[in-house]
Every structure is written in structure tokens, then in C-alpha cells.
Image (cartoon, rainbow, N blue to C red; front, side, top):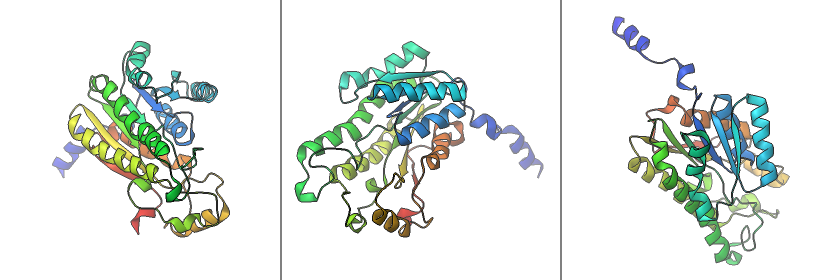
Length: 277
């Protein structure tokens, strides 16, 4: 018992482990749904946050709201990450502005509802140009940004990269969900998210021990989908509902902070149990 007590005394309290004061975080797609939830989570824990987004108005709005609500330093960085030079500039821009970089969340992505020709349509109608664009945005951009930021992330021994995956990067689609709706499930989305999860494992071993690399795999998020889809999805989910954005805040806080200091190469699935059966 005395040994146990001594071991307990030597550890940091949870409040200290989750404290991100002084750390700087970059969130791509930070003005979007899950991206904004991630920005909120990190700001609540005290981090300075860089909101990277292609939508200038939403990027600035998100940055201003976070600064007002959480009294942390924020910066709206408006970039089209499909431009490799722009993507590679993220690390240098953040270092010039804040002097350090500790957390990178690769969240920007083309999703199932993206408005592209030959995207969320039956397989025979899916187009190779949409496929290539999805691989570029969903997989190549995280590779490029992480490569460009790797040295900065390693400086303070608390670097954390979080890649946002998808259940469709883990399992195949149940196409019966989409019957009678205009929704679809693009092959390129699944392939790019599956590749991102594997890239997570690869980077975790290569960037260790200075930088940890993990993934969060969200399940379906409620965004006013057709009731036919919604009802079917809930029946196939053990927790009986679709996700809300706030469901991902705890996962972000855990993987970004010292709460997960001994966790790397992990894919944290936040799907209400969807992939459990």
C-alpha cells in the first residue's frame, strides 16, 4: 500500500495533464462542423488556435468567436490546401506568428455530401477526376502538412498529430441506408480515409518519440439527413443515435494533451458502436 501511495503521489494530476496553456494548435477545416468542435475543445483547455480554412468569412468568424468565448489567442489562416505551396507554408506561418507549434489536426476533407460531379452517385457513375481530388484533399494534404510541420512539432517533446478518419475507412458501406434518398457513398471517400488511418500508423512509428500521431474515426453525424436514412442509421447503432459535434471534443482533448502521452498509432473510433457489430 505504501508503494502504491508513493506512485500515486509522483504522478501529475489530471488537470495538469489536460492543460494546454502555452501550446499552439493548428486545425485544418477549422471553420467546419467537426473542425470547429476541435477548435473549441483545444481552446477550452487553454491552447492558442490557428483556424485554417478555405472559406474566408467562416474562418474569420470562427476565429473571432473562439477568441471571445475562451479568451485565448486565435488566428484565421485562409488557405486553399489543394495548393501544395500553401499547404507547406502552414508550419512556417504559424512559427512566425506564435513561435511554436504543438498540435496539428488534419481535419479538412471532401465528405460524402460534397458537391462534385461523379461523386456521391452509383459506382458505375463515379468519376476518376472526383477520385483524384478526394485523394489529394483527404490524403495527400495531410501528408504534406505533417511533413512540413514535423520539425516544429518535435521541438517541445509534446507534439501531437490527430488525423480525422471515418468509419468508412474501417468498414465497407451498407448501401441499404441510402435507398430512396439522394445520398450516396463514394469509393474515393472510403479509400482516402482508409489510407489516412494507415498513414497515421506509419507516421506514428517514423515521428516517434518526439511526436505522437493518432486518428479519430467519427461515425455518422446528424445534419438533417432524410428521415429514411436517419431511422435506418439509428437502428444500426448500439447507442441508438447519430453523433453530435460535441461527441468528438473529449477524443480531441485526450489525444491532443498529455492525457494520452503514452498513446501513438491509435485509431480512436467514436461511432456509438456502429463498427462493433
